[in-house]
Length: 179
Image (cartoon, rainbow, N blue to C red):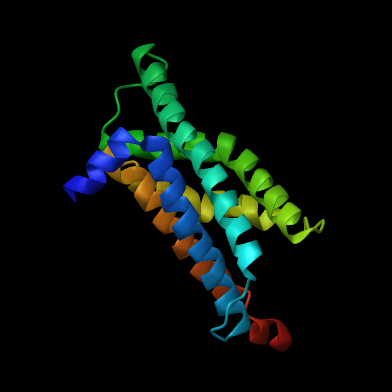
């Protein structure tokens, strides 16, 4: 555990990139596995590599957003534009402000990069991605922001795996055939 804490403190951007490259891509793979109902390699190696690069790039923006929005909320409190906050209210407000501002941009950027990798123009259901900010990411990041800072990016990357499972489950092919 000490090694992990030292790693994320000494190399915050690189460690975020590594965690998201692995876990974010794993979430994509799990989602495809759940959708197809079979365990196989859903992506060719070159696509898998590009997805890892995509997640690494997204990790940089996420890390900066985590730090920046924490400063944003702290600044609002210090300027008496918000009352003093406890651990939960600070985490919740941080999650709401980050997800409803930066989160929208991230959903669009993520889909744009997915489209670039897949060499297609698929903007179908982008609204569902944006709605996930409310039903998934705000509660998930509220929990995330209640943790000590060295663990926040790691948990956010783990949430990507969890969301991959959820989306894969609800987008299974047999579900589509029944409806």
